[in-house]
Image 1: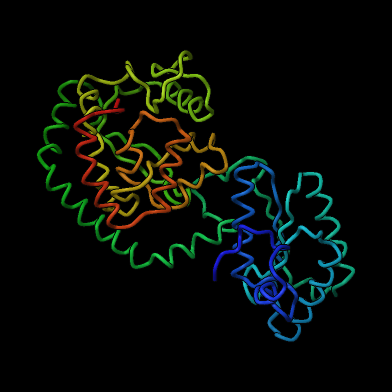
Image 2: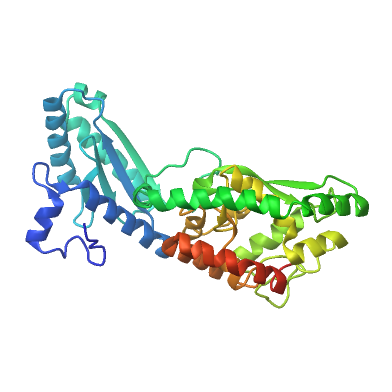
Amino acid sequence: MKTLLRKSHHDIPQERNKMLCDGDYGCYVEEYFHELLTFERRRSERSGRPFLVMTLDFTGDRDPESRRESVMWAMKTLTVLTRDTDIKGWYRYPSTLGVIFTEMNSLETESLQKKIYKSLHASLSDEQLDVIQISFHRFPDDGKPNKPGGPFKFTFYPDYPKKERSRKAALKMKRAMDIAGSIGGILLFSPFFILIPLAIKLTSRGPVMFRQERVGQYEKKFMFLKFRSMQVNNNSDVHKEFVQNFIAKKEVNGNGGNGNRQKVYKITNDKRVTPVGGLLRKTSLDELPQFFNVLKGEMSLVGPRPPIPYELEKYDVWHRRRVLEIKPGITGLWQVKGRSSTTFDEMVRLDLQYATTWSPWMDVKLLLKTPWAMVAGKGAY
């Protein structure tokens, strides 16, 4: 179905509107309701104006006739309660109705919930209400993203599972490339897996491998691997403050303090970095253990860089799409174009551009450009 999101749902010609509506219940069909929900989410991501989604799940009612009657009564009640700008449709046909209440603040949300509960109790019998599960979902959730690590809720992202299904063959090809590429990388760079640990052990105390919790696709946490390039037991607060200030667009410089703003995503001249670590970072050889992350399926060869949980806490709502749209990778569009020499918003836009235009051939081209970016060392610290 062609998307009509450039127009308001009130601007659709009447004959076209009939095609998008369920004639039996007077609400939008599932596919179009999902398009409108996606549009409202994207608008809210940019404007910051929240909206509310209510779902009424009728799956508890096993009797088709009884369910139909309950849905009809619920629709009549909602018709009275909703505004002209609100959108009613099937969130999941034929079991779950959805209503998008546009531009709702916290006080309006609380008042509306009470009014809807009261009206439904007045319109439906206790037996009908017992089998209806009513849920309210606010976006964004007071500006606070869900904590990563738990099961991701697709309530506001119905387009993502559809994208994965439409790309099923291409994603299988991407995974095959990841497996072959990671095994090939491990074999090709096998001498470095011996030489680098020796160099680290001979020049500094501590483990060879650096392990850090990162956030992958759909905010699932995993253990990220690198060769250690810093002294052990260093204070991570320096990096935490620097990155959070950088994301928040505060004036920072590459030394981690305030001053003239530079377009750099990493701290330069970091005293915590060992001499061997500085060389590893400059050449990106510290990233080699991530081939094992790719082999395990936690990462891809190409994709956005996986953030640290405390970075995610400072993301704007639209920034979060970089950890939702596609699996994180070792290299990517922003690494090849600018590596660390870019603003955070520019980096996110490049990640989203990659997620939107991705193809296996694009991955091949980025992988071929990556060695030159490593040799040039531009933006690597």
